Image (cartoon, rainbow, N blue to C red; front, side, top):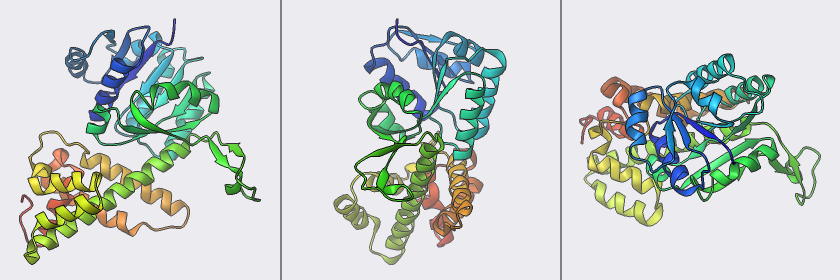
Length: 323
């Protein structure tokens, strides 16, 4: 019969992932989708090919499924969803796959909570912008028990993503006491996936901040932003060029719905700084990036996007926020 799959959370990333799941994976049962805002789920369902069905509550989604994907905005949303599932359903034997970006400690608490009620858990945060989610080009980071990760991989590379990073194994050369690296040791800590995800997002913030500062200097010095953009195309193709385009085109302040919302970017920055503090490291670049994000929030509110760090840098330099 195959798995009965439910998907909870239809934000920018979740919608793209669901589109690819429905169109590329050979589903044997209708995909169950649920979103806190029912109207969004209903509208989205009309854009999908069958088989898809809508669950009006978390309880309904979890009861009807044995494999449940979760893709939500922050730690409290994930915690509330899992608490509801546990309090209203028998989750024994059900596999929960969390694609959300949360603190590694939150991931570990999720796993313990689910397992204490007989459920199963895999962490699977993803790297990539919403456009990459739509194109099925995400990088899926998986951590947890190896046999459960193998159950999840068929939904990742080739369906929702282009590559998998399996964090459930570690070369022996990286273990205390050495080893030649020719063998691997199983690591069942699901928090390893969100550790990598949070650190990866801190690099995104560094990148956005660096582009924003360089473009502001280029404009004020008379060099111009176009030559700088041309250099980025030659030297750093990919995300650098994407963010440069969003900045110089004004997309960063014109959007009705952010691609990477300022509140989520600040949440990731706080997680990164907390992770660093726990091991005696200070991430000064992230601290500066977070200050710019606070300025974005003051100027644009919840509509603010991480790319609007450009506006904050411009404003600090005596230019208008909007280019």
